[in-house]
Length: 366
Image (cartoon, rainbow, N blue to C red; front, side):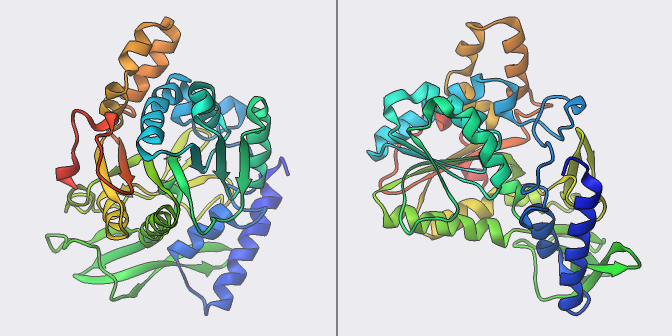
């Protein structure tokens, strides 16, 4: 299992079989779902190293909780306020990675959290999370599926970007759905005419590749349904992406699908299948509308930098070592994570003022 080649070969065979069963073509969303989540073989379900600060470890990327514990400690300020505002005591995390964020939140929140529930499709990552969270084992549980009702505060850091997307390609003024076929022993693209369209008209007549996000939007609607069926709560998602008008800007004609392997980015998801991450930027307008249409209130939307600074990150940095300050600076620098990463907050019930959006709220841009 440490050698990716046999694993990638088996996953490739399985996807090729799925393509044959489907008549020779599958949409990219199905390909992405299998490449990332096929049980035991997909990128997030196999045993290959993923998270780490340096490629020498065999890792592919680092997320904010892996950079510095100041990330989770600062986010905990918002989670605690949300727990109090909603009168709940449970935190839910989707896609908990190594468990680093869960540990930072649990260490910071103390008795404010009675239970911490992780929903993660990866059994191998679950093992790592259990080791990381040993000190809080009495509070932590894992679920394979969503319950019918939820209450508490939901967090998701770099979760929405890993949800499968559909690719739309405009060629010669005609819209196509881009899918995957088999050519020889390799995967290749094939476009088929479609009635699907981006949510906004894209000006111009030039060829244009983009994504639509029905799975992320369905996820938000399901989350809203469950929070409203329970005692209520709030949700905060941090990820890279744009509001709709920026996402479907005429100049963004190459789409946003990107792969990550050994801390290098590349735009080709059809090679090294199962060995690298596949992501797409988040359409935050679509996410917010999906939650709102399902009954949630939008608490706010802003950059990660503004969100964390509103929650006191600068003061925490000032009280820490130079090394910690240097790492935390990456969370807020405009040319690193500060501007590309955004935060959206939603909640049930009456609107309340979330501290993370106290200044710099960009909800009007959604």
